[in-house]
Image (cartoon, rainbow, N blue to C red; front, side, top):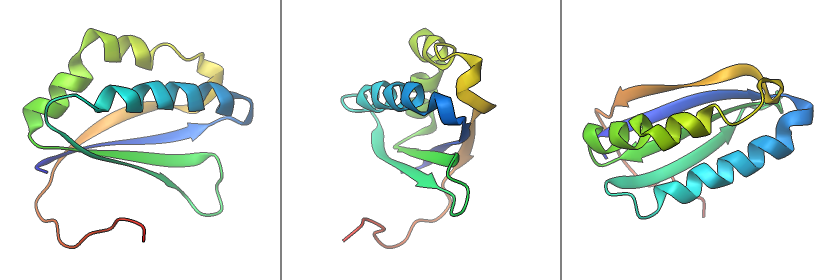
Length: 105
């Protein structure tokens, strides 16, 4: 993977159900998308509402094509503002080094 999209999220207590459905829809869009490699969701210890998600793409073009699509922009705006403590903002990174296998065993 050469490209990473990282999004930090702070989900409000009452918005967790709405966010979970949104996240499931977003994840289902990855599979079958050319260039998609891996997805991970992390939860900060001690802060139940604070998460970050990371997607890994074969190329920058593949990741940006996915996120720049009109459907994705509509999906980001689909949740009511009360779902978030802070609005999600995808950030883009070039993967410089990758070693090992971090899959859960």
